[in-house]
Each structure stands twice: as structure tokens, then as C-alpha cells.
Image 1 (tube, rainbow, N blue to C red):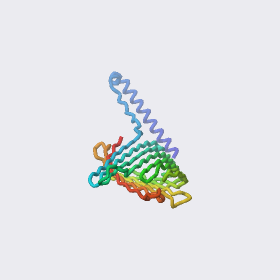
Image 2 (image 1 turned 90 degrees about the vertical axis):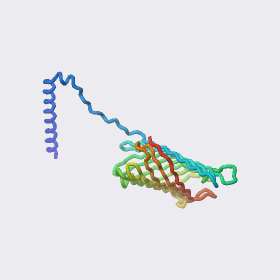
Image 3 (image 1 turned 90 degrees about the horizontal axis):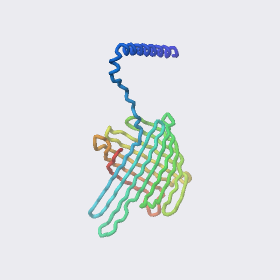
Image 4 (image 1 turned 60 degrees about the horizontal axis):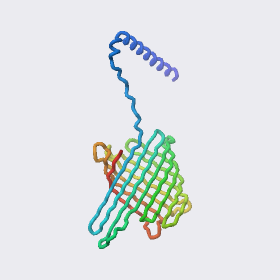
Amino acid sequence: MTTSRLLVAAILLAGAVAAQAQTNTSTTSTNQTTTNAVVARPKVATPTNGWKSTISLGVTIARGNTDTTLASATFSTEKKWPQNDLMFGADGLYGETKDPGQQKYTESAEILHGFSQYNRTLGDGFYAYGRIDGFHDGIADIKYRLTLAPGLGYYFITNKTMDFCAEIGPGYIKEQLDGETESFATLRIAEKFHYAISPHAKAWETVEYLPQVNQFDNYIVTAEVGIEATLNKANNLSLRSVLQDNYVNIPAPGRLKNDLKLITSIVYKF
């Protein structure tokens, strides 16, 4: 193997020397021509590894037997390096409704959520991550919920059409629920799947499970299923529909365990 490599290197070196000699000869004989010629220089590609961001807005208005207004907004941004991936995101949902004969509107939705996640590639499909989530739901009487969760992830599938990964690790939750503040250790198990239906459409789903380590009947499950299709040739404007489910096995007193939302919005990418 070493002899073959040396032979190939010698051949390439000889070819380079011959080409240089031919160039020198041509330059000497046609000095005036080469002086007036314009030398074409190869273009050097500039790295375009910048932030990729999206913002979406959605509004639902109903008038008649019930007056309802519901508005949603989301923002996300991400930057990737050869071995690192950094993501930030925030979303909110606010709604008001008024029954017939009533003068005042009442809140029907008041949700704020933000997150940040950093991934570090380890090789062979594995990566380490650190994640922070902040959550508020005024209707469910969750003043705040802060979740810290480092862990390990693995890509089972990753290609141009789809990717599927799972994440697991310890976590810590601090929240104020029904006016009382508590904190506890938790386990975080999550999975994410993305599928490119076509160059102009995609679908995805995610599931996250957070049980309290010393009280497994106290757990939170969040899930999302979404689909998005572009609306213009530039592929920077699209229509998105997302079904979100948030299940809390031990909710605040007088509140339901499950919240289900279907949100349709216009998305702009930049």
C-alpha cells in the first residue's frame, strides 16, 4: 500500500513539473499576449452557516352566539456548526370569549412558552444536549414552570428525507401551581421525527415525558404533530397547522388534566 501511494505521488509530481515547464515555455514565447490577457481567478465559496429563523402568526375570530378571539405567535431560530447545534424558541397563545348577554370578555387562553437547547455531536449518531424550558398557563393556574434537563440523544435515522432521534436524561422542575411553589427531580424522555414530504412540504411529531423520580404518578406529557406547506416560489412563506397536547396527571385543583389545541398560522422564514 505504501509503495502504491509513493508511485501515485511521484506520477502526480511529474505531471505537475511537466505542466509548469509547459506553462513557462508558453509564457516566454507569448509574453505580449499573456500580458494583455485577463487571468481568471477561481471564486472562493463564502460560508453561509448563519442563523435560520421563522416567525408565525395566527388569528381566529368568531362572532355570533359566542364572540371569540384567539391569537397565536411563535418564533424560532437555529444555527448549526460542524459539531454544534444551538436553538432558541418562544410561542404564545391568547384568547378572549364573551357569551350572549354578557358585557365583559373573559380569558379563554393565556399561554407563554420559551426554550433553548444546545446539542454537541459525539459521533456515531450520539450527541449530548442541554435544554431549558419556561412555561406559563394562566387558565391552568400555572404561574410558571422552569425545567432544566441535560442528557444524551441518539439519531436512529438521519438522511435528506427524514430524521428520527430520542433523548434521555435527568431533569429538574421548579413551578408555582395553584399559588404554591415546589421543585423536584425528574426524568426526561423525548423523541422527535421530521419528514420531508416534498421540497415544498414537511411534517413532524414530537413527544416529551417528564415523570417525578420519587413519585411517578406526578408526570407531564407534551406532544405535537404538525404539517407545513410553502405558499410561494421563494419558499419563505408557508401555511402551518399544528396539533398540540399538554397532559398534567396532577393538575391544579379544579383544573382538567388535558389541554388540546389546534393552531393554524402563516409562517415567514428568514
